[in-house]
Length: 149
Image (cartoon, one colour):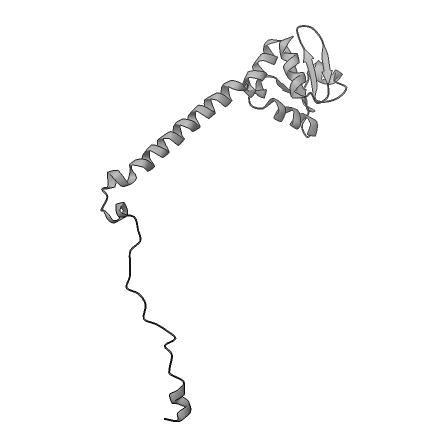
């Protein structure tokens, strides 16, 4: 060795690693039975299902169903006349939702209905009891008002 190498001692850049130590909490080291391990998960899922059922029941009771509106309109004497290919008629049917079949009368080339012939525009609402008429797309609020009277 040279004098220069002796003057600079070799440093150990990679010291030996410390022995492995487990820092996990003590309760993790115990063996858990499947009942203990999955018990909280089962309770959480059951609580979630119950909460979901409560929310669905509340939402369904809070807003009257679409079929409900259609049947109320029909009981008041309202009939909806629509025409195939009419975009506003399609929107009106979506506004009513399910149950619109009890209200709807389709006016096409083959229909011999006098009301279809006298309709100036579509969608065409006619109250067969009172004789009142509404032409055009009706909002949900207007439909609710029509169902009351």
